[in-house]
Image 1 (cartoon, one colour):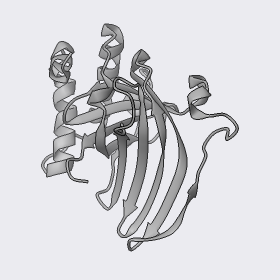
Image 2 (cartoon, helix red, strand yellow):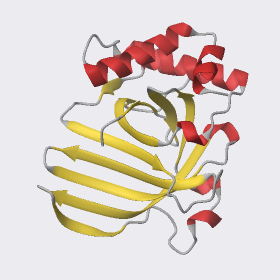
Image 3 (cartoon, helix red, strand yellow):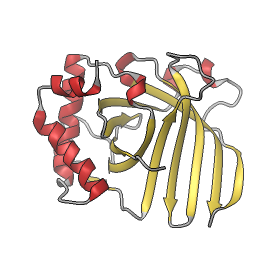
Image 4 (tube, one colour):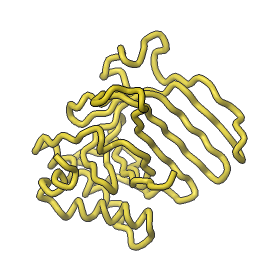
Length: 208
């Protein structure tokens, strides 16, 4: 199902409009919905997607996404009204990317993940692998390489393992891996819950 049709099927234009406004205002400027409105919209979107059991194709996730908004703690249905969240300051550019290299077989549920934060001329980036089994729109991942640079000069580049180094990523149980559970994916933005229970919103980055 095309992503535009998935969004239309949610039958909840209010939360889609709120998140789209947040994403566009973050990227292009303009009035941003307040933090509480963004959190409420994400909670509503997650609830509807679970109820309707919507499934998103991996292709819709591929690309580069800039972190726009994140909650500061775990959020659930009971606590979201008092939850805290922030728009990421423009000075701190946090980006995540999901890429499928050309050598990967068509329709493969796996690929490369990159997570980068840049503050001025300081850049820290970790890369690794992801799997997207398709169940519950869950994307599991693990990082194995890190790079740190200042003023374009690489000061460190080497191994970085967040998990058990003795077990290959492909063989590790999903329950042992960090993950994002995506509950809303559009051409403009994506939203997900992390393993720690927090919620996040990213906006598509067309220039990289």
